[in-house]
Amino acid sequence: MVSFTGSHAAGVAVARAAAGTIKRVHQELGGKSAFIILDDADLETAVRACVAGCFMNSGQSCAAPTRPW
Image 1: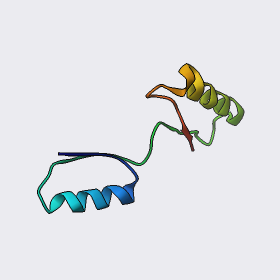
Image 2: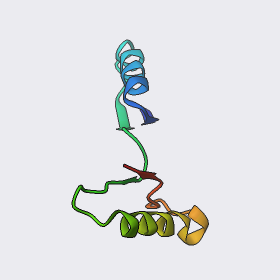
Image 3: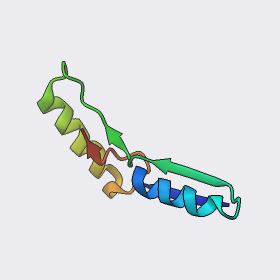
Image 4: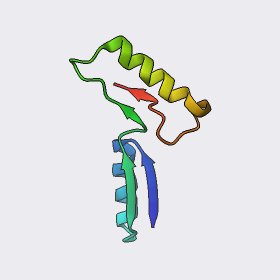
C-alpha cells in the first residue's frame, strides 16, 4: 500500500505509479489544516482566531489552522 499526503498534481503521479503494480493507494490531497473564511465573516476576528489556533500548543497540533483562505 502507498499512503501519500500532498498536492493534487503529485497525487496523480503517485496514483499512476502505483497502478502499474496494482498497489492500493490512500491519499490526502489538497492541503493541511484549511481555515476557510466566508465572505460575510468579520475578517479581523477570523484572522485573529486563525493565528491563535495555529500557534496554540506551539503549533504542534494536528488541527492547527495553518492555511487560511
